[in-house]
Image 1 (cartoon, helix red, strand yellow):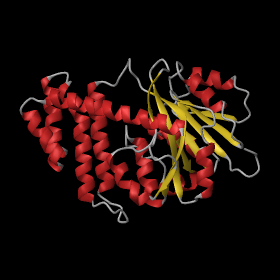
Image 2: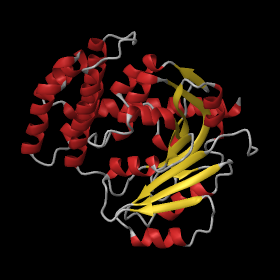
Image 3: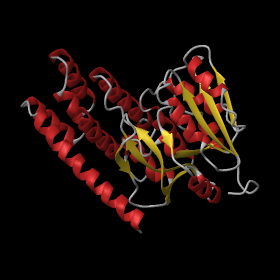
Length: 335
């Protein structure tokens, strides 16, 4: 891209105590060739090792700052993106890696369509050692969809990867950034608000490596907390439904119940003790299972101690979906 016709884009990152992976993630930002570009990094909590790395970087596009105390995940996102100056920005986590030409397609689509609040792309999943284990590729290719059409889907589940998503700064300012009390689904707190004021785009291009922690997965307690946070965020936004949506709130609530019930199946069968399992069971009965047919089915299956059977069925379903995604990806790459 030539410099003059294109807008400034900001690549943002916040890092805290992640020196095993931060240098590789930083290099993913520095290798981008789009112009004009700025790279903004927050060394959260005055991470001394990260600051040493940043001080040795002579790239004039890079500027960084630090905080005296760790800010917390979502607050750090807001801090570093607020410090950016681009018309658009992309936030990349300090353990994920951008691929070459990670933003050109999104910029081009958003420049042509001012209604787009955010535009995402395809990505791969990698393990702790950087090996590809799966990929997410939209079977629809490149597209634009109305925010009101996509909002119900995002209430049920996050529809894109933050590291592959370019955001229009003016709309980010309009909605107030991420919700800092959202917890694990904090990224989706922004998309749900952006879909109320604009549209969403997607470009058919694999642009980043999203890392899954295989060797050190979240604890059972953390995964239960994540489940509750997903429920809290979605029900909060569903309480003020988007009137322009063609999907009734009752239907969205049923879909959300089915989704959360699926997420809970592995938790039920892997609880560390009976007290934890009972706590989960009570929460599901009060908040999730009663709201959909699949949820009520899960409740009955749990009553007859069939959670393991449900988990096996869910695993087979996920394998079939993974095979379908890979076939679609291969077809798109070959076309």
